[in-house]
Amino acid sequence: MPLQTIAIVIGGQDADVGIGGYLTGGDHLTGGGHSPVSAYYGLGADNVLELQVITPTGELKTLNQCSNEDFFFAFRGGGGSSFGVIISATLKAYATPSLSWSHFTINQENIENDTFWQAVAYYHSQLPHLVQSGLVGYYNITAYPNPLDFTSPYRQVSGGLWVLNTNISALDAIFKPILDHIASSYPVQVNHTTQYSPNYYDWWKAYYSTPGAAATTDSRIGNRFLDEKALTSPSIESLARTLRAAYPTVGLLFNVVSGPGVWNAKPAGGPGSMTPAWRSAIVELIVPVTWNYLNFSLKATETNLLTNDYLSVLRKLAPDTGCYLNEADVNEPDLPQAFWGDIYPTLLSIKRKYDPQGVSWCAPCVGSQHWKLDGGQLCRA
Image (cartoon, rainbow, N blue to C red; front, top):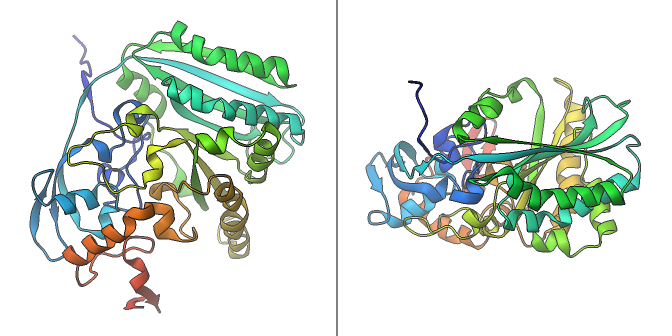
């Protein structure tokens, strides 16, 4: 009899996402840990029941809702690399769900046509309804077929949205009317296919279990959470102009990974220390830029565009939200506010309590502004 997966824990989208950093920031940047099912079950940090950690002063501590509660709060979204080393984690598990999945594309041959972006804006104005109805997924906007082929004749939205423990007919009832309206109202081509998987883990293995190849590319990314206000308050024309202004050469990536399970999460020990913007987000919009290997001049140009042009228009569109640490621009203005909001002073106080000498450090982490790199050495600012 073949082995069957009967339970899942909330891990990252891709197979090469480390669980420690994903949950807390134990190996790099993070802000809670999103997944293909987080809209139903909450963020990775929402599902932590207990951690064992080594503190910067060399102590072994157990963190949970009854022991070292402040430290438990800080680790769950505050960037664990700021606070210590995780040696074990106890997580919630869930019965493996079924999944109904839609792959969709919206494309247009004339990549400079305003009507493509208006179709994109209409779709995003409907995204709050889709997310509130249980849809979750990932998609991108890019030139087709090659994002780096400037002669490509197509601009395309392409990706997938899915629902858990629901059949294809119910999925179509939610999503298809929006796609039909786009197809009938804008001069674009819309394609839509569906499939059903009785086992989420089998579906995930088929589409996401192969590690990515990001290490082969010189690139940087930044992001912004877009809430319902950002997507529905502007006119379609205004939203279209904003999304177009945020579009770099490579394309835009959209993670529809928040939703009722994140908004209404009831974690053990109370909410974690990730940005409160997670609790109202509809979509995380990621902006990537790339440059040729060792082309430092182009790197400077592209990273400046990322921070001061592409992401700037998104900050204006959603001024009251923030960023997801694990996929953020390290040059994001006002890092503490963007990454943690009003939680930051509490995190800084916890940092000073458990790491009074500042042993644990990384450039955009809690307390990092009190240090500086000087000739390769870390010195107090």
